[in-house]
Image 1 (cartoon, helix red, strand yellow):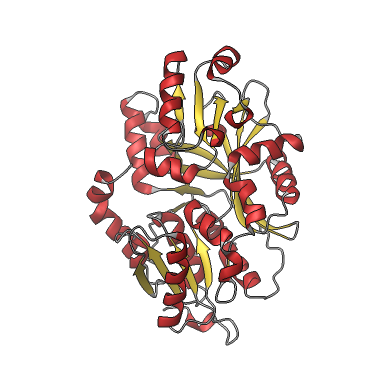
Image 2: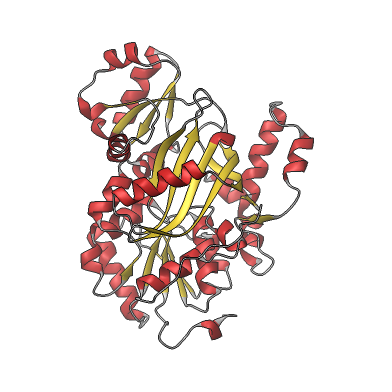
Length: 401
């Protein structure tokens, strides 16, 4: 490993990255921690996680198929024992592993440092029904929403809400895994019943939300990414989306650093309210009708674009790692640069689609690629993951949700 010399004798706890096919978030963590000289192990159920090709990945280990919660805890302990690892730090990259680690944190802490908050805190982020109600309590604006656990009927909703609207899950992971969508768009009463029934086949009605659609495209989406510890913001960055896949309710493929004192203020307010500790992303959408930022969700884990911070000279995962193993850290702020973050192939796909639909000109696309940028997978310093992404692109396309 190229940067081993950076690691001090009393800072040799390895990092274990828990992935679920989310190679972008994992690659960012592998590079952030590995570049500081730490041993990094990557675990995934999917054999083609691109992070395993990084020069900073010590070893890739397959998670057994259909492993249950208790068996997964046993599996992690076995990995630690068989590899003779000194109390590793567990980093989740997805909601599923956030759930398992948080629910079992006390069981794990004898053998691991665990990069999640206690379940009493995490559950307020994990289930958006609880998160929205908390936001309303502290007067943070949210989209107009109805919660089916409150006993409201579809007939009442049909009278109250304006179409189009969305049915979205309180618990995203299970919903997205089974449907490949973040929400169902509903255009009329007939679709409301059909989509509601489909959503109920995935989640309990009490974990579903009926919500208005805030006008505007991804350019109105803002996110506050931070390391938040003991009520204090250690470091942060705010991004603004430009493109996402799909464009209506998708995942960002192109974004840029921005600033918004209001987004920062509201994010800190809700994180303090729940006593959150760790890395997280707080999402908002600016409503063009009233100019307000409407709160969407908290992702209680490292997020997809966290590597944009590295491009700004802030190694947030490493700061968090040091805290978890009991080292002191200082607030880390720097003059943030105007750098774009691009998820290369997904962004190319959606850009071509938008050009063909006449919603993006070729000239606009070329202009968007100018100036400083960093990429989700491509790195001159660690090229192999991008080479393999290029080779495996047909596989990823055929196996996409």
